[in-house]
Length: 107
Length: 117
Image 1: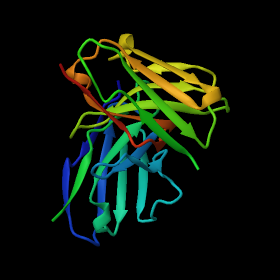
Image 2 (image 1 turned 120 degrees about the horizontal axis):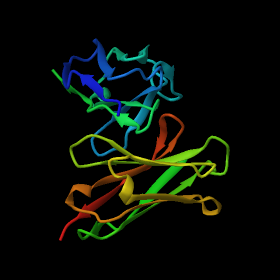
Image 3 (image 1 turned 180 degrees about the horizontal axis):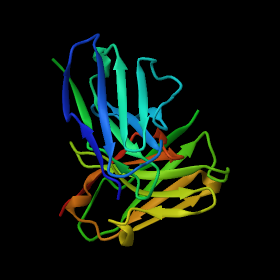
């Protein structure tokens, strides 16, 4: 199974700052890497697909990059509504796997 | 507009079979490339992929639960189903269905399943 390691586990942020979240795969997943946001008591929401492709309706401050084993989700100007847990997921090989998540909290 | 909604028993006892239904709209599981997946999440924990079913009836299971899982679909009624046999307390979780390609683009609201004696 492909193991996805997300770091950091928790990130304390100040509104307005630019941040980056990391997701590293135990083997190459090409660009079959997707990012989700999950707010408390809500279902996950797809933010970025195929490493860097934007999703309709998702604010432009969210962007993704990477390929192979190293991926980054960036938020350019964090807003209070972004305080959530972020998961990466690989769809390159079965079983599909998720990272353990990065929690954004207010500094 | 794509929507999905899960339904399940709410609570069941250890060793019973869990039956889940995903009722969806806005797409058809008879359309080329369409698929529905099931994912679960224990309270306060991460996400675990369980199974996928595709428009051509291909099915894929998480090997960690493979012998206990059965996924199926009813294309005419826009539904997908998941059965998990011999449940125990470790199967207590919120169960989601989602429309899938490689990513899970649309998710249902989830249904909480509690396994308890």
